[in-house]
Picture: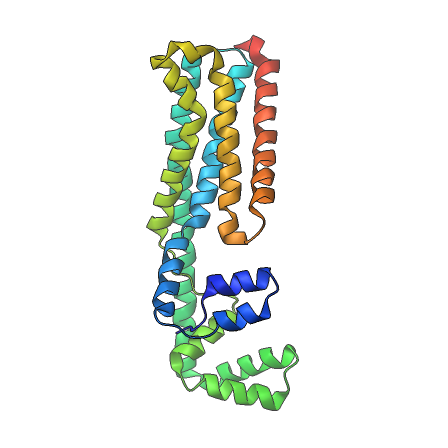
Length: 265
């Protein structure tokens, strides 16, 4: 059970504030429960960010390519919606399978480590001692540390997973990742074609469909880049501009290709 408040500790480090860091490590009522809640809600941020980024860029790339080729707005809707469904499912299935594979690999390696700890504890202790000695710890200290760790079987296996195999505990749900990816892809990927759908009901904005799509896409990319800082802790403006630039390069490339090859359509 951690007494520190992780968000406060991160802010203290970011502002180089030792006093705030000490305060963040002091126990307070409800701190452990709050920390667990934030960790659980934040585990899908990566899937949301990257699903949304891919959805926005790929859908707008299709829109830009069609616009560059001066094709019918109806083609934009067909390609855009088909892209949302097909690529969204593809990404979410891929996320599910990769997450599931990682979880299965972790479970298999954990079972093996637990079996080795049970049947050959001396060998496992020796391995852990050698790891610590290789990192510069004195042999006597390494032996003492390992003996303390080995008193608790679960902690021992946890330590072997991290120190020997480099596998960190992962509580992510493969299905949760897949759903977060799909819905993020669909929601953010819908925005680049939103102007074309609105134009069906509001003909007055037909002439501004593509510029509006550009603005919505730019705002989405910047917002996703800024939101990403909840993971990275970086400056939100810089992160937003970086994401906007990366997505802009893909969009410009798609528009130019559509412009060059428009005569073939």
